[in-house]
Amino acid sequence: MEPCNTPACQSARELFHELEEYYDEHNLYFQTIGSVLEAANLLDVPHRVKLILTQPKNEIMFHLPVQMDDGSWQLFKGYRVQHNNVLGPYKGGIRYHPEVKLDEVKSLALLMTMKCALARLPFGGAKGALKVDPRAISRAELMRVTRRLTAALGSNIGPDYDIPAPDVGTNAQIMAWMADTYINFAESSTKVTARGVVTGKPLEFGGSAGREKATGQGLVFVLEELLPGMGMQVEGATFSLIGYGNVGSWTGRLLQARGSKLMTVMDHTGAIQNPDGIDADALSDYVKQHGGVQGYPAAKAISTEQFYATEVDLFIPAALEQMVDLEHATHMRCKILVEGANAPTTPHAERHLLDKGVTILPAILCNAGGVTVSYFEWKQNRQSETWDESEVDARLRKVMAASAQRALDMGKRLNCSLRLASYAAAIEHLNKVYEMRGVFP
Ligand code: GLU
Image 1: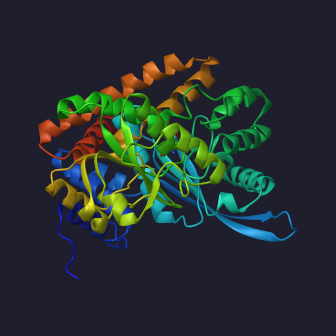
Image 2: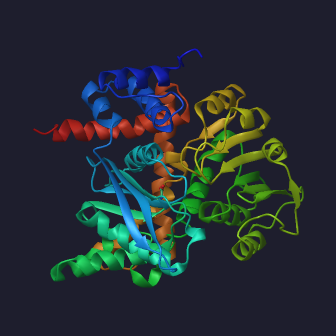
């Protein structure tokens, strides 16, 4: 096969050669760093900054022995990748998924660096993962693996150093076990602030109002900021969703509350459609009971192909990476692709959609609501404050609107896609801080 000659591939290849790193053009990390470097090349960024961003600072890998309920032992593989901390402590979720791989965690950590920089949060980027299917083990086993993982992370995490949060397959309960384990190891003089080691905790245990819905809420704020300039409104817009977990279901419910109509949904159990609209609230209750959208009575089952081909204003992937590939993109009939998930679109699909005139609102902009409210939680923990939901929402709207404007302005300045513009706005900020701090020694 011909080597890929897009600016993104060329930029990544150049740096990988210099670092004598193995590369594979289909690898998610190669692709993600490729578009980050393509954006950096549109700016006047010193080579050293590109070198630094091309590799994470730390990649930690664990093998954790845990005893299961039946007395047998299992060895679980865990990762924490700390990509960059020039702006502040490493920050990013921990995902539990049976097929997770190091390169995927590296990509997600890099995206966290970009996300926090675009939103101007005082955090760097990280991501963690445990290779486990959380649905396939008992609650007691889930608690034991979580505590074992937290103990193994040890001083590699901390409220001033690296702050995990929920991601795919993890939730507030898992964060509570992580915080509790960490506090048990903490010095007595730091036990009060030690809970700030993770965000996305339950409300009763140092969590923030509005954190659970935050990613969906942030995405809606971005749409409210950007759609009018594209000749559209949230009210009356039709949309489809991939994924009906935390991000998908909150996005569905919040958009519906603002007058948008949910046409189709696909998740790991199947795809459903209703031309008159699917009630996002009723579907959320159904998914809580049945574990997925399949069988939801007020919609009809459709094929994957029909799902992608449904005509909608907004197509919103809110599940795992790479779910929109070239094959799917050729069927898609939407005006705007709104990335609720991290890295949901392959580079081939992206090129095809841009050529078709579809606008792509990139993940580091659209799904930054989660980490932004994580920042609010961390701040409230440090100051022993409790903000109510309206205060959290007002602050979140401000951050999301400012990030959206930053991306738009950069897009105009560089005459490029919003993805490249969002990366460029993030890199310009990171570069300024590197200029001021210098690179040690
Ligand atoms: N896992 C979420 C993300 O990918 C949230 C991260 C956080 O709150 O630190 O953005």
